Image 1 (cartoon, rainbow, N blue to C red):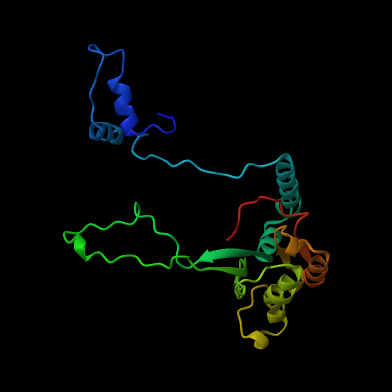
Image 2: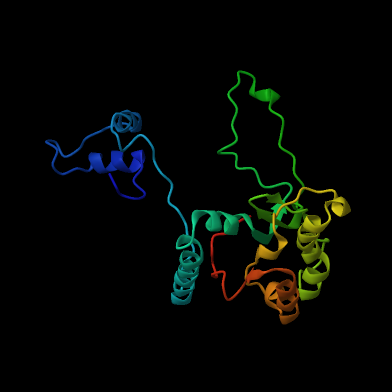
Length: 231
């Protein structure tokens, strides 16, 4: 109990080599061990280990500073003001999507009396990957931008091809008929724009552009590095 990497096979070997037994050897099958574990309140489920990012001292301090900011601006105010703030945050990011991911045969199984009828899972030798950029907020999602193949998202590409998708959410507030899309924000003057700290986002030209469009920008100096991804 409460020990990592101890499966039924290992438990069986431990019992077999137990020096406290009368004859020095105990043979217990794995199925017997599994049945016993299922009778306990702690052994029914074998939980997988979780893997997290190792945080530096700077990462920790940045998170504490961000939490202090949120506490000051949202917790100490009224609940209505806090809700309005949350409703006017636009979270944005880019993410790589694999169209034909590798299949894990251990998790993809079928119970059948005719295994010869199984259809092979076909995929290209080299899976196709695309990069998608988009934003999400309490009111919905922006249009998604598919990054052109073999294109690098540098500052110029980000400003000319991706940011316009986010800026149009503000235009939809002023004149919905232009885009014929759902209005995501009630007040365009109170929208907070969030982006992470990759170079394309933190270029001076980029920060100057988004600062002119949005009331507040959460970027490199606000949004903590190595934060949980939203994609």
